[in-house]
Length: 620
Image (tube, rainbow, N blue to C red):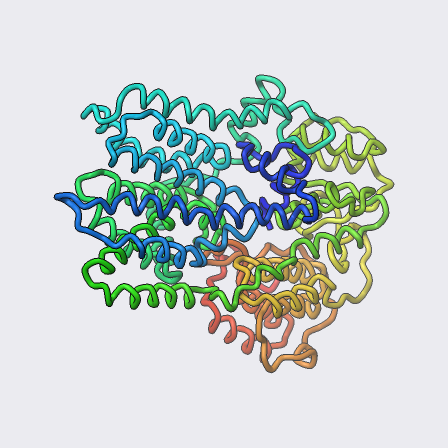
């Protein structure tokens, strides 16, 4: 719903995605998407699934290397290691990133491959350069998919590497080979400069000059999102702790540490390596100012410590298999139960049926007026519609204007190459991004305009009216509005998918909350409540008659978007219920308001962030 459409698009086009380029994913994705007999999206999704599954191999190799009887470590039955790790590989935290088009499965596989080669070379006291070359190569390839994943593993390796060099266990030649392997893996980044000059595909940032190269690799298209204080960082760490407690990830980490405590004494390759990785990735995640524990990308970053924890559990079961053979099958059964109850359980998973963002993007494009300018905000609209137009040829006459990219000149260059019939305008000027968009619209006055949000249209000085999928920009609206097709489709998708496709239930809640707010701002409270409730699962005892006391039409007013605590990555049904109750209260349907508020409290709690606004119906 966010990066996946863009990653798919640039892989199919052999273009360039957002910083820092992810060249390994693009190159391998281009090969996968061209396999005969497979739809490109199926092949690209299969690439993630394949490397997610293959990670069992380096995770097993890493654990088995530590089962080396010596004065510091007990014996172990290595037959139990691989089954334990494979079982835990089905845990939602490891399953989820491998079921979407993403860079994390690729990066995690090569990072753990590097770690497994390194640990075997050190424990075998292997002076040959080959294992160190493949260690560096694995890290370089991991960095070519995701820099942060590679950096976290390299950081955890560094102390043991320095100790080995100080003790002359690792030769300088081996170090040179490690560096050489890393540089070879990083050579995938040359792809960025090879493709930078293409004008027939999406090339993010067009890094062809020194200035544009610096702009691209410093990620200047993105605003800084770091925390402002240590207290904020610690708050995020605490939220991650309770999230991992609920999702079972903390239990996995603790059990994994138990295995390393048994087998990795005084080596610097067990407890320290494991602890260093999860501390690094938790610290990295917690530094984000825009933070919510259920951000899907966090599963990708935490996959490395989670896989290492699975290796640690494999060590623990190997110990029991050797010293308490009758206990090992019981522990394996407990691991299976652990995976089966962690939400979403395997029998509830529905990601294979999840086409929500693709479907609403396609329908929104099809419903747009001929030659329309469609102004989009939020990636769950931009990414799918961009992919569908560029790669599937859906409505090539529509001009898709991603508001967040309107500050970037390369985006306008690409837009005008796709639509040479657009009238030119002065790109540089005062007023920032919004004024630039206004200048563009003034230069193309004859085209119909749609927007994804009423607040976006208001910022651009354009009144908006309800429509089935997006919002029409026009000065006069009809006197009635009903629940839009977007909400009806969202309700059906929510009923079919449930919570089995992580993130989509939250996205459905967010999409319907956004549209409900827009309808209320436009003066249609009954349609607003109906739309809000489309994002709520299993709403018993409610029908159209329940809305009879809510007026169909009221005077339109600019209303602040609803903001709530605690933070969530996308949306939550309790927020929809709370906002619907506030609308009902403000429009005189007090019994309905109480009913919806009670449901919200049962699902929540939520805390509205209206502290800076007067508590009046106009500011709901």
